Image 1 (tube, one colour):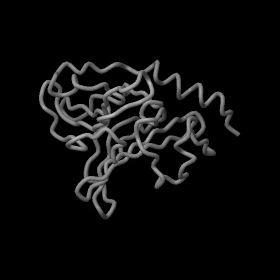
Image 2: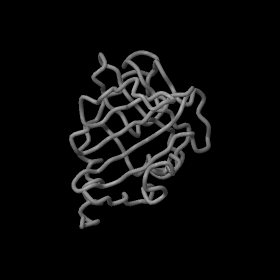
Image 3: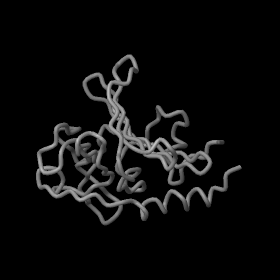
Length: 178
């Protein structure tokens, strides 16, 4: 059985051990705070989920996924026009042994995007699949992502389509047997 306190300590300590990615460009991210960010294996492109902080450390709005080159306007932004409400993006997290996994999912024009981060061998990145579930693209982070799991959880809707339903959206991650 996994000790929930050790798992909770592990995933919270990830926030402090994450490497900070420099945004460097007004066009890419200076208008919001990064809640998840990393450089990918795709010619210097970045994956980012950013938001505007409404209330210190707890309330977020204008959440967007952004993908593209640093120093340029993002190639892809979702949603195109952020709203003050909860965006159509879904969060879940689990602990499996010593591995802590975060998943953020959204759909756009028949494609499903899944931003993922693990402390295990799978690393982090974004996987895009088509309507039939075929993988059409995977961009992997080449560094540990800069991320704030608690802020992501509070800013996004619960991903009830994950295998553990609402249990994987609580403050502490769902603990799955290794």
